[in-house]
Image 1 (cartoon, rainbow, N blue to C red):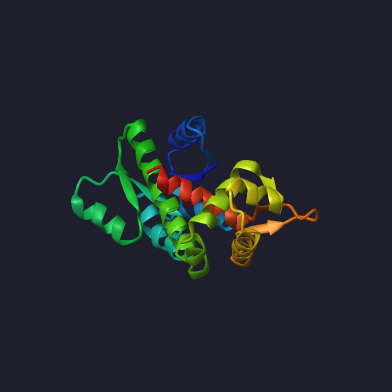
Image 2: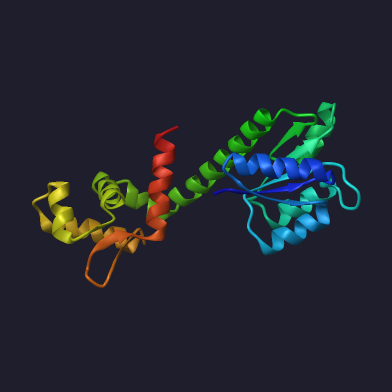
Length: 213
C-alpha cells in the first residue's frame, strides 16, 4: 500500500484529504507545516507528499527543496494557488513532480497522484532491470520462464522445473538455475526447493507492470 503525507495548514482540508485517500486505497498521514512534515519523513517512509505551497512557519516552497535533497525518490505534488505559469515552473524547478491548483476536484487530484506513483514505479523498475547482472540474466528466455514458473508455483524442485520447462538436458537447466542464483534472483530452502528471492519477486513485478502498459 502506498503511503502519502498530506501537508497543509488547513486542518479541515488535511482531515478530508486523509479520509479521501484512505478510501481510495492509500495509507495517509498528515502534517500542519513543513517542519512537522520533515519530522515525520525522518521517522516513517512515504511514497508521495501532497505539499501546500503557502503555510505559516515553513511553507511548501521552502520545505520542497529540503525534502527532495534528502528524500530524492519521494514524489511531491504541490497544492498551489498559483494562477501563473511562472509560479508553477518555480515549484517544478525546486523539485516538485507535479502540481494541482486550488480549488481542485478530488478525481483530478487522484489521477495526478496515481500518475506520479506509476512514474516512480517505472523509474525504480528501470534502475533494477538495468543492473548489469540482472540485464544479462534476463536476456535469456529460459531464465525468464523459470522466474515465471516460480512466481506461479511458489516453490519447485529441480526435476519439477526441468519437466515444466520441457527441457531434456538437465545440465542446461542446472546452468540456468546457477546463473539465476548468482544474480540473487533465486534461492533454495533447506529441502532444496527453488524459490524467488526478494529481488526476484521485485523483478517479476517489474516485468509484469511493464508488459501490462
